Image (cartoon, rainbow, N blue to C red; front, side):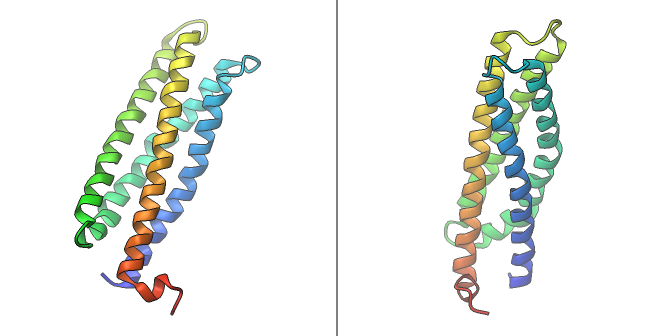
Length: 162
């Protein structure tokens, strides 16, 4: 693995993480907004639908990119690279599952007349909060993994030496 290949993969991951962190923050804020009795819950649910649509497309594309570029690089790192890539793949599967559950809850709300009932709003808060928390932890784990890989594979670059 050469520095140019790794740098390209790293840039992709970091750019995507910055964009995703904005959406993750928006998810947290929209979910929290559902708890505010002074806010129209329909508006909050509409915002959650927008965020979910973004996650369904952009987050999915991001995970596919990582699975095809970053994870193979990590797998080459001995001795723990294979296990780390396997863990990150497993977390991607969990993110997909949680996002699908969240989307299912949003779909139920769309089918109900008269706006979402309180119980559905509470479910959205729970699913949304858990999704936000999992995405946040996952992004930090990936960032740490990339930095550790960089430090081991390119010690001079990691130390700031050209």
